[in-house]
Image (tube, rainbow, N blue to C red):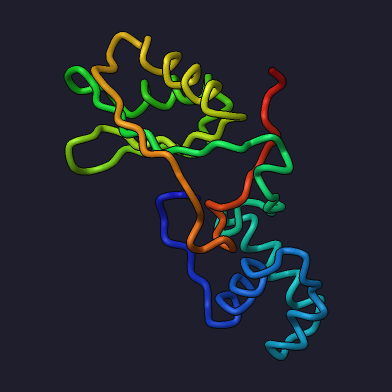
Length: 162
């Protein structure tokens, strides 16, 4: 989304809410629920996509069905001030890293990692640690999801082959 503020009204909010709950909801169903025609809903969705408010549609899949049986969050501590752009380059090279962000606090970044198993996770961690500007990592393994319907609980891609 661009840095400018995109104006949208209460009907747009209702459309976005419906699509976030179920991206396969038809324009006719959404229109019926909020008092618009399916054509009007489609025009609004097209505008929301063009302006970058809606960035895409995805399927949420049970991670273990795709081979991801191990999950962890990794705090990354850098030597000096590693620019976010450099961190982004590194994490893009690891398909097991499903989300990465710079954070406040002691760590410089937080990574969400999915792996086939603990051995695979350890191998991913070692690949991350070889970067010359990474001073240390602290990992926290996920035992279970307390909100299993959350996007973080699902997988977006299958595990790489062994």
